[in-house]
Image (cartoon, rainbow, N blue to C red; front, side, top):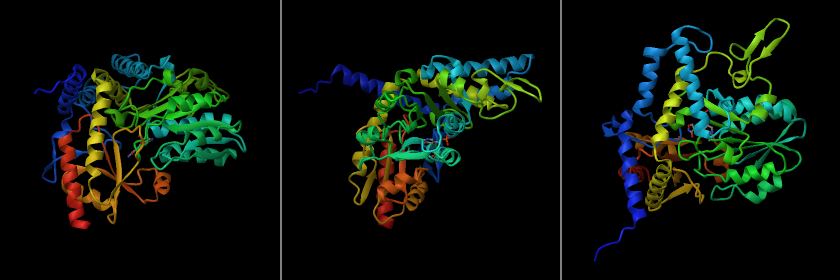
Length: 420
Ligand code: 7TS
């Protein structure tokens, strides 16, 4: 008897094989840690970088380094062109309508702070409400609290169920004429939940409420189309999507960005300055005061080029396979409880083991060369919701393998032998 493999099964196998072949693009993954081959499962904190991104950064400093937007000399023009070309790559990556809607920032945290401190005071007055969810990262909580302190606004929180999913009925009830902005994570870093942001944006828009999406954990794992989502603001960090640290993107609709006051004052964000009056620059420069991370922006462009070559649908399916494999195997470990069991999940596996502190799990895994994150993951309200002080979290990228998951499971069994 022979097994019949359907064409689509074979297709998927071939695609997975091609994805597995990409691991060698990431030089850092070849190293040993504590005498063992490194298993890097801390991708939600930051991803590793492919050689092309590293080479782009090197080349920038070796051949192009110069300040941008201000020189007529060869190098300055070359650096400016490379930086502005990266902005256009981001525009296409997000399917934004125009490159002026792409603002370079330091990262997701700055993207949210930019909106909360410029758009926020325009919209929010005493008694007005800002709606976030229970599963937000601190960087999508604290900026809104600061705004509330300044304006008398009120922070409202959408509850989640025991699986770590937003309760949509409760969300709808919380959308009222007092709601001035909704700020939501696309994918939770602590639980892995993929939120139905398209639907949630539609519900908010039905009442004329703008929505900011924190895309930090989404962009490395799925194709994001800001126009299809109809997001008003969308922000992410380059370092979680195979690019450098110190740079990220805030996307905003032109109409909104145009109406907003500048964020910081300084060079590049002006057209003219006198002591009496300063005329601000046009978009996107109005929001880009001071010398930015030039190499970072160009490196982000290289990361996007790299991702454009990847089969992103295959990547998403491959990561789902890693997640379900790991979920099944950890499910066999006695006393282990997964925190975050949403139906729609990205490659994040947060868990606790009865009687063992997550930090001790992390330390023993580190001895085995395995990097995971332990702690509250900058999402303390999530920990409170699930009644745990911290979790251990393994988070996957497409360059991880089932063999690494086997090593991880073996090490978890060792943790229980030693401490259980
Ligand atoms: N939003 C989400 C959903 C995140 O996961 C993070 C970082 C941020 C915002 C902030 O991004 P930054 O680049 O501005 O710092 N999350 C994590 C994490 O899970 N472990 O380390 C950082």
